[in-house]
Length: 117
Image 1: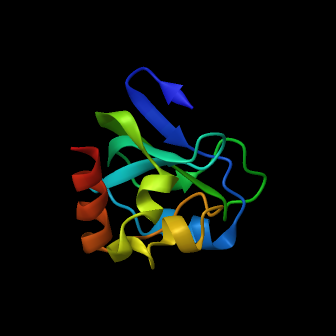
Image 2 (image 1 turned 90 degrees about the vertical axis):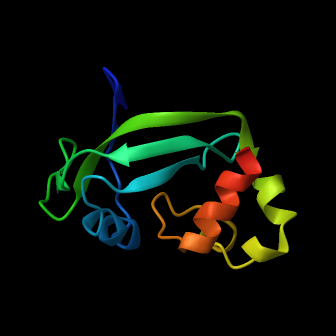
């Protein structure tokens, strides 16, 4: 959901994804990966809040987090581009493509940014 220059990641109902959100903190820079439709990394987000109980949650264990878009990749880095790079073969975007929030290594993060440039 986009809220006036802010992106809210909410509605996550997967325990692993929720744990990953719980480890995020303000100032973290993340990849914005859309796993619906054209699977691709569309840009970078900066986490702007601590995790909080999501507005769509009936239980407190389901969290949300807000982020600020800081860079858009034009064109987006597609899943096919990720698959073509041997250094990314163990990246969760390839090994867990349906997981909505995944933790990736610094090496994978920098490789993904390199693909966008």
